[in-house]
Amino acid sequence: MRTTNNSYRMSPSDKTFGAFSNQPPWLIDPQQLEWLDAIDSIRVTSRQEVPELLRKRRLPPGLRVTTTAYYLGKAVGAWRLFDQKQSRSYSRSGLARRLRTAFEALGPTYIKLGQIISSGEGLFPPELVNEFKMLRDQVSPESFNLVRSTIENELGQELEELFSEFDQTALAAASIAQVHIARLRTGEEVVVKVQRSTIDRAIREDLAAMSWFAPALVGRIPVTSLANPPSLVEVFAETIVEELDFRLEAANMLDIARILVQTNQTALVVPRPHPKYVTRKVLVMERLSGYAWDDVTGMRNVGIDTSEVIRAGMIAFMEGAMIFGIFHGDLHGGNLLVQPDGVVALLDYGMTGRLSEAKRLAFLRLLMGGTINDVRMQVTALRDLGALPVDTEIEEVISDLGLDGPPIDPTTLTPEELSAQVREITKALLGYGAKMPKELMLFIKNMLFLDSSMPKYAPDVDIFAEITSLATYFATKHGAKIASDVGIDPRNIPVDLEGVRGSLGLDSSVQQITYQELHERREVIRKRMQNRAKAKKRVFAGFRKR
Image (cartoon, rainbow, N blue to C red):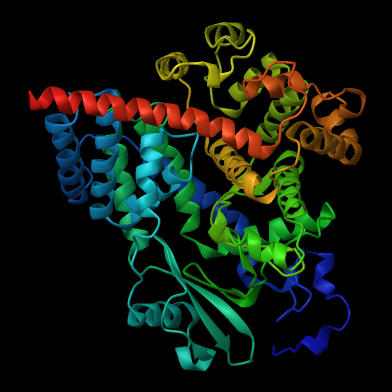
């Protein structure tokens, strides 16, 4: 198995199959991967497990419910006693803070849920997002003895027989697993992902408890909005159950690598999973390195065009979703490394969006509807994706949400007016039974992450020009397939930027706007809302002193 860089002076042969590095520690042959043989049945079994975990129970599912009830009840009770009667903003922030403390006490499963919420800016209430960001670094690594035991039980050999070097200090520790740097006996430097020893059982017990409690929380706490508890637990279960089998993650790596090759995307690479050392609880993979995602200055100092980096990431991500129905579902700074040549190493495939063909087509209609500013097509596509009930009256939704009216510039609204508008939209959506399907949540979460990176990576790029460029790319490269799939030929339809302006709260007089300028507009809105909250807090504090 041992290889050296000199073994592959030419392009590695497996790069015809997947977007891998040019200096492979081993070669990937999908026909020779034993752990890949049963992957379809493993995926089906994993999905079938979710309804059973979430089934309605007449009685509480085990002792875990008692612990959950204690911490969540304590959080909500303290909120009602000390925070609820104060200002709306103070009340919501107080509840988010108390829920975050409860999640910390309840352990890895709840911390994982909190981490997902924390990366859903724009999807979940801002109070939850901001507070739950504190959960991102709250998981301590397991002891090395437990790591050793898991590896040896899964791979059937003693640690020293497998690795000549193994760093006992975890490189990173998350809720489900932790990662260690090691070197195989055959010489290759690798990353070893090891599942926490009791997380499988803990997650199943916690999901049962969550699903039992969730219906009782509907309408009782003010920070749930569209992230209503039963819907959120369902999405969380669909997401996390697949993460409990690392064979699925390794298969996801191969699928994404294959899609990148088929679309001729050379600006991203995927680490190679080991041909042999992949099990349900252990994943050995190629180690890739590069600049941290936030180190934009370091990248520019070595001549990397960061605007091209973010553009390539956006295209590859959208291409996977629109054309193949498969995309990386957890883009964030910790999962992206930018190599000195500007190629992005894409890590961690536990969360991967997989759209059925029907949902892929609905998703494609959603994006095409945005391109041509067809509101009815977009709302219909949302219904077909599962975000709205199947019997939803499309015209009523459009009318109730005011989607057929002129755009409103949010920077011209007072904080009270903006809050009222958000409340009315949320109320209307809940009235229609709206929810956030897993795949749509992952896609939007990723888009929000890429969008938040734009001011750093491409601050001076004109948004309208960039959108036009992306639309032209997809029309030129995939126009025939899109036309065949949804009956709209993007090659014959100009991009309608009025819908884009409307979504940004701009009128037709605005002909260009950079990402930096858009960021500044958002800061105006954020500061207005923040100042309003502070003012109300001072008023209530003064009232209480009297």
